[in-house]
Length: 222
Image (cartoon, rainbow, N blue to C red; front, side, top):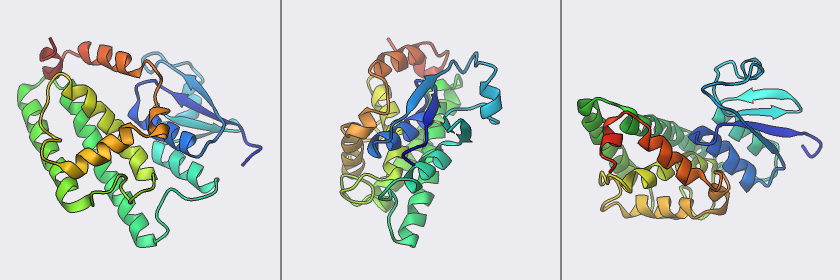
């Protein structure tokens, strides 16, 4: 692994990129980052990203796409796994990662939809999802699996970052009376590898992105 060159193809606000960057930071893997404009990507991007999405990890120039494939590859080629050792618990982590993907998709809908009815429906569904996490999943530990950062934490951290930014303008109450969820969110957003997964000007860039949306949510921003 030491002799391999890693380059992450990135878009500054992408939550899926943040997953990979958090793992790179946690594992202390030397790498370069190349930023592209997804609205006007360079021609070479289509050769390395068949789905035309980021992140893409170039390993000695060879592309690997899809954020979870990247995270798991980086975990496997370095010492110490960020998954539980027990196969069943590892499978459970992967199941809850899929659950997190659903929450992330719904969160994107929440601040981009221009349909008031869909906005309200999405808010209600998200509230149910967060309730499931609070009641059926979390154990009141700092991280998902206890006291140690794991891949699943890298998955949920970007969506918690989204919701922190959204709550500054419109608090939907997703974290009200949910102490386990709040502990997990606060731990992750204060964690070094998570902080290193975004650029220093991320908050300002995302704020501008929010205000630039022609959406129900952006209409509530004063």
